[in-house]
Every structure is written in structure tokens, then in C-alpha cells.
Amino acid sequence: MNKAQFQGLLDRYLNGLASPAETKLLDQFFNSYRTSSGDLPALNEEIKEAMFQNIEVVTGKNLRRRQPYRVAVWLRAAAVVSFLLIASYVVINYVG
Image (tube, rainbow, N blue to C red):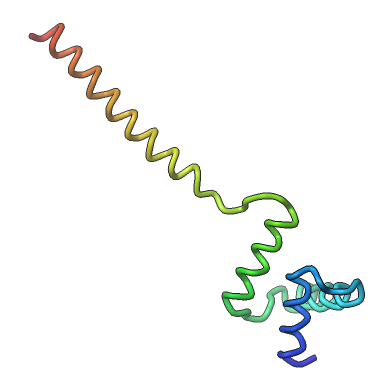
């Protein structure tokens, strides 16, 4: 199988158009790398991204966790505001 054939087969698989025989061929291809060298050959970033998105669609899970970062920023801001309010209250009522 040459690079163009592999790319076409991979495109059909990622678009959900691959036949069961083509899917089996891809499985065998990737399994052969897993057992022989332990590492897949360098794939370009576009193929990696497409495969990653396909895995997310099939599993129904968002594997990228961006939300905790946003929550952490808001929690930090709330902690700072709370600290300033409590410190102001203490200074006004007990020191002043």
C-alpha cells in the first residue's frame, strides 16, 4: 500500500465510509506497528487531529479539558475578592 492509498483509506475511515474489510485492514496495519516497533510512524498533524476528533465523536467524550482552567481562574478571583472583603471588614471593625 502506498502513501496515497493509505491516505484515501484513512480518509474513508475517518468519514465513516470504510467497509468492514477496510477497517480490518487499518486495524491490522496499526496493530503491526504496536507489536513490532511500539511507535507509529510520524503522521502529519492534520491526520493526528482528525483521528483525535473521530475518537471524541465515537466515544462521546470531550478529551480536552479546557473548562477546569476557566473554573480555576474564577476560583482564584473569588478567593482574592473574598480575602479583600474580609480583610477590609477586620480592619474597619477591629483596628479602626
